[in-house]
Length: 235
Image (cartoon, rainbow, N blue to C red; front, side, top):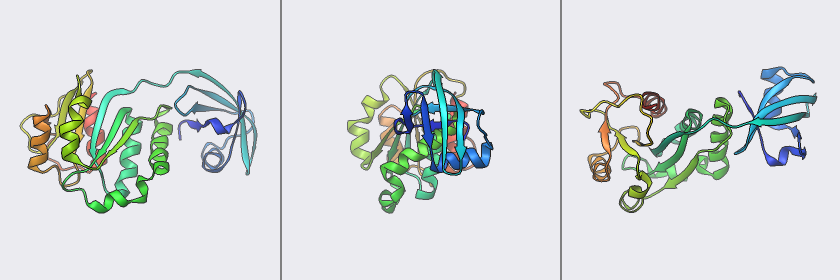
């Protein structure tokens, strides 16, 4: 981790924290820190700064912290992502978060298996943990908004028009005549389908909602690879 995430319950004084578990193991095993060392820290959904190690042993880490930095700005990007396979979900969430996506909507699609919605990886604790891992990688503290949508058609008809708002709506769809644009600065809503892609009826529904189909090239990419490639091109 490039930033040690702090939570309100870690504080035992206004500027002092005590850490155990995963974060302690990382500091011991990766950072190789010692008392007196300074580490990058940040409070979840709050400010960032530095923590000076005051005590460190195999059972606990204590730091004096100074939070004097604002986190980086989010990309003005809403990601509409067809729910990936459970083993891909964690990587996709962490990647989207580390890239700075402001809002993530996990949505159903024809080629999303029903069993995916029963995965324990959709429990709130795991969904937050994966986004926290993405924040730690990117040195950020602000969680992207996250929502789950089980019914594609009603969402597109009733909710998506308001969500799209004044953004540029794009749907990634291999074989589209228009290539993905590059170097934009405006707010975007980006729809990425499941492995196997959107079906024609879904693409039509998105087009009817104002989306423009765009192509990323002749290669068929994994979800997390396509996500990184598309965001890199757009911004």
